[in-house]
Amino acid sequence: MRSAPLPDAGANWVDRRAPEAFKPWLKLGRFDRPIGIWLLLIPGWAGLALALSQDRRTPDLYDAWLVLAFALGACLMRAAGCAFNDIVDRDIDAEVARTALRPIPSGRISVKQAWAFVVGCSLVSLLILLTLNLTAILLGVGSLVLVAAYPFMKRITWWPQAWLGLTFNWGVLMGFAAVTGTITSSALLLYLGAMFWTLGYDTIYALQDIEDDAMVGVKSSARRLGPKVRDGVAFFYILTVILTVAAGASAGLGPVFYVALLPWAAHLFRQVREVRPDNPGLALRLFRSNREAGLILLLAIILGTVGWPI
Image (cartoon, rainbow, N blue to C red):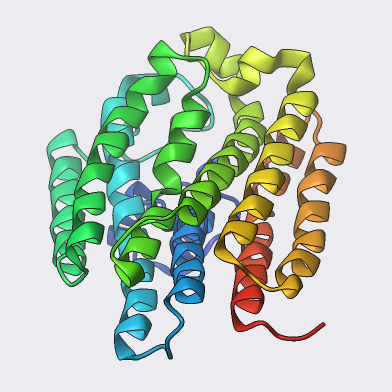
């Protein structure tokens, strides 16, 4: 049986090039949609970069390993999280057009097989985690509570996107702790800013599912905001900018950081200007553009850390 592309996946390397037997597994881990890996990875790298600004030492081989470790961990834990989410949501996914072709609801992968996938990815992630310091290890273990609870948030709150923000940006704290062994106010401010960033972009993403979510009784920030979704996203992004600027000030980043934040802020508010509640295709494009927004923010932190002159 051929593995059909998911409605929100578009053209991707899995459908074009992956062996047929591997396609369901790669789609279970969402490797056909790497945007999620980027959005999980960038906060971790941002935490590493911010920590190096506090550490005031020359980066060494361990720091290089941290960059690689967080990349590998983002790939594996995002895959495990997506598979766990699909196990929990398999009945809902079967009723939603955008998700009905996912491997579990379509019958290409059984629930037992999906659990084995989750365990396998988690065990490899654990081996990577154990190379970090104790504080980062404890934070990594603590993140499992957020990951495990996320699939149930859409059943009990209108703001599951906020919980996703707490979960997806945990890497800020882990990355910072992996370098410094502690958490400071600058790391907490960056984490909170990134949480509101996720709340904004995932609200945009949820616009694709408003009708189906209403039909099956799933809650979302997009449904809660309704016609005021643009105002809501604008408010979330304003908080993102304020908290991120505060994080830079708390960390003592150089002036280049604030200059480099200007195109990042402009990128966020372009999304606000363009978003349309009745245009799912545009919502997906705007959501995906947050990889570029995140990379601009990461570059701003790096430039602020090295203190390049204006």
